[in-house]
Image 1 (cartoon, rainbow, N blue to C red):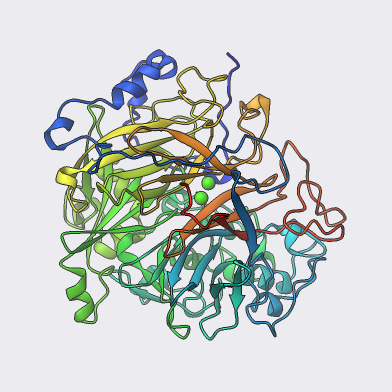
Image 2: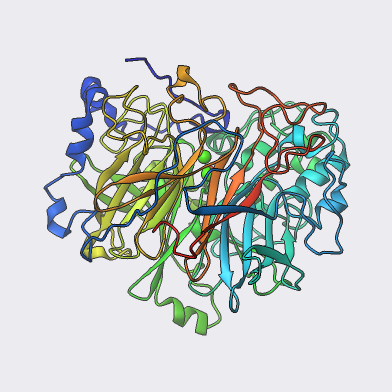
Length: 629
Ligand code: FEO
Ligand code: CA
Ligand code: CA
């Protein structure tokens, strides 16, 4: 068996020095590595799991969920969908928000002012808010920019204009889209709803951390949202967008030593973007508290284009991957992963009925308790409160108040004894039985039954059932739903050729109960035999039956890209996904340059003088049926 090296993104190396238990110390290494049995065992925990039902049990009799023919793994520079399905490209990076707006320039020479009026770069989480008929407002995150592809001259000298164009490429787009009844295609429509939120848009703070807090006092008033990764939507019709790797935007050329809290969030003098060289806003030595204004969940009202985005501080400050909102007993519950190796998964439980809060003119996201998960090896788990004055979070231990706990969420979670995980990404809640699924994308191996493979280059999906199926409960039972990978490289993996995948990231249910899984294989691993990723091919989206565990590959994306973002039209007959970072530098395919931005991919335009760009893709079934049937 070829040894597979764990793949570690520079962004994702652990910065968690706490001695919270590595459960690998408990289990023998042999048991972990050899062990299909370890994984299987985790799925059949008896005590105390049986006390309140183990995850996976359906509430309705099973019906055949996956009706399509699987797409073969491949390395094509294309989007592939099953026979009988079609895919169309919608709103690629640079599309003007208005038909009268500035057109995309394929040589990368659009200005910052033009980018502010165009769709941003690197589409990620999204949600379609239905309007009438076959129209809706599509809110799309723009996670980051590729410095080589974003400009005509690539990463040559950073200027203020280039920083401004990058800042404008980040954030969120809200656009009206509609299905043309004649052509069957989705189109961007001119609309007063169309807007951009960028890393420069004025924002407000709400909840326990006020913008007047001493640690948020920085140059100018709070602006912008950044590294918007995944997202969620609330039952009251708003979009929640999540700030992930905010640390990477800060740097300095001054002499600088990060303090303990900066270190805990991965802030260093080196910046991947070098914005600080021409804009002191991003200089961590000159403007240190600017970094405390990021790492939050941000609420945007797509139906009010004049509304100010609000940072909902009660949900904590971490590298938020996403925010999956559900309801239980009239209360709002938000699950959110902190995507870095060795970090935690969190849950916010609203205080009182959310409808009553809304009636009182309050935000249900401003009132409640944040918890962090502890997974026990016996298949049980508990939610530990991050509340000032409770447990170790006391004045005697140096905690000032609840705002202090929330600004330093990671440190608070260390203190209460949360379980380290192999990079927690998206969370999905099964609409049928309320089981909760979490993708753990990959990692060096945090050990224990919750992280059953060391190292873990392919990741896995863990799931839990809250006590009595109540998502506000403070205890749960869990198992490993699937160990990702390729049996050719790891005999513990139980997946056939139509199902092998690695590095799960996006995840979500449709209304029929299909579980959709999207992968983000690092570009240092994609398609490489040395990484055990050759049979898996390009990144993919798969559908799974949560009861039978049948998994089938539904879609594959172009070279260098990940597939992310997941939303359906109201009738379930159009599926929207995002193809992010096609053509990014990758070990297998090479490195794009300003002279040849097409070195890896030229999707979706395939213009001989163009460049690859992220885009939304809409999938429909040719017979007009529901997706996945
Ligand atoms: Fe932005 Fe963890 O992916
Ligand atoms: Ca992601
Ligand atoms: Ca990822």
